[in-house]
Length: 503
Image (cartoon, rainbow, N blue to C red; front, side):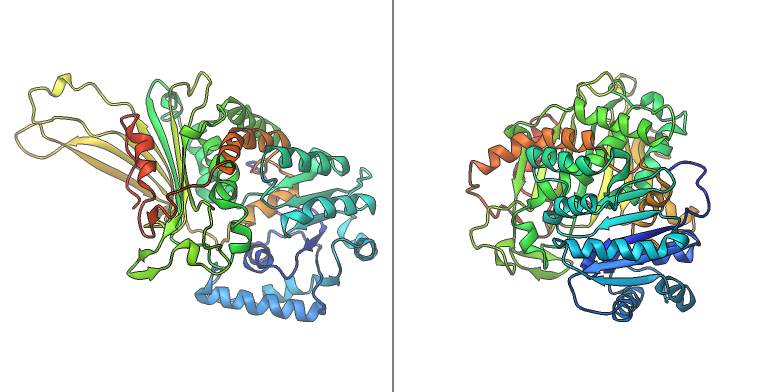
């Protein structure tokens, strides 16, 4: 995240637990391939896959190649139009594979032996990536510590990347942090959130802190409220086993959505040093009031229609209970009690099977006085908005009032657009490239610290407790292809506001 990264990261080995998993195939390996295309992998690099599947290194390489080739043809998270076989061969030549049970000492002894053979090439540096189910996070870290694999001697480094979910509530997050930090120092732990790898998310800090135009008005004196929307058209698909015990709030809010809040609300750091940035993010979470049941709405999608195609209800999805009380939508009203944001509500919503795929941060500024226009045909001035579009089309929009051509003082709301694609040639990316590169060079700016994780869970924990004590009687309560349950509209209506349309 720093402004002057070295072109080539230091030599290292990357041990990838969950080598046959969907995350490895769909995101991690494509990101490594894209880094290889950009010349941003370590000069001497080794990738060691670890999983229980009985296969050879050659079979693993072929499996990944075939999957990547499918992605390049538009079957998923696209990378290039066509695989550069020379680049792929260079990456594939670094790959090896270990068959192992994550719970057995032998697996870690085999890893230790393999790393020892690579030490002259990798300078003893090693990254352990846990692309595994969250139930293995604690056991794998324990075993790494027991085997001496995460001990640093001052000449080399050892780092561990942990995927989400990092805990399921405040208590489990605290327990997992305590367990991990018995074996590792905080600076060795990289709690990854792929949302923070998106260019537009990172650009929030550039927009705010590199422009004298925005920061002076980025406060409660000028801003009326903030809306953050993360809507998806997809349903639960094949993830029912995970989703039934997780739900929309745990899956999205304490990590993805709260990271967008933190980027929007944080105070300016004194530098882009990782600790300086993360300290300011942690302050945001600590200033949030814990949510009350009246501050949040949950929903579950019913059957409906999206893009002209009929889709089924959540309860009819494979692997979902017929009386499931799992939420697929959540909306909330959040308050941040500090000098910058006191009195400015943050409205958050995220859900599946909604009308459009859309992630945006929309900031509404306070209205101008109407008095000047009392003699004109203007009953009410439209609001001024600054809209940061995260996906699918990355960009920034500003809405303001302008005079319509003609003899009368007639106003109309107009939009100024900045689209990333119009200005920059974007390198192929799946969202993990920047994050992996930052782990290689030891930059923790875009990764969550232990206190951030716990502070975020503390905000939503009262809602989880309240929802666990009661079964919703109105599920399913929104049609697929809609903007969510009507109760989420009421959440804003009682404050005299309304959601922006999902476009």
